[in-house]
Image 1 (cartoon, rainbow, N blue to C red):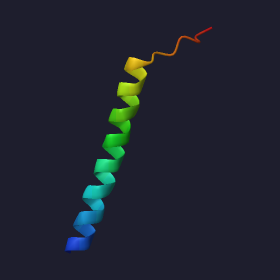
Image 2 (cartoon, one colour):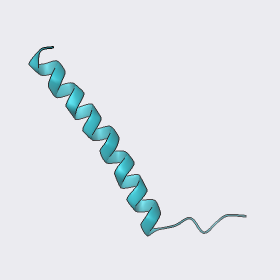
Image 3 (cartoon, rainbow, N blue to C red):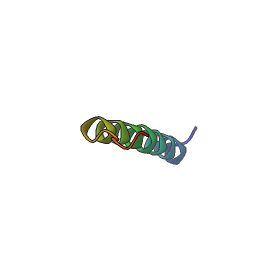
Image 4 (cartoon, one colour):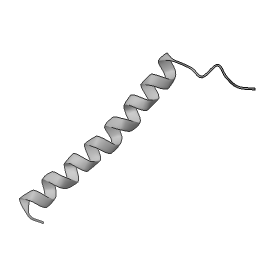
Length: 36
């Protein structure tokens, strides 16, 4: 695997997990009260 492919792979993994982590933290700090 060449360097650019490695960089793209790492970047996509970081973006994916980073977004997931941010969403989880946001949900924990601001729980959804609208549960009918």
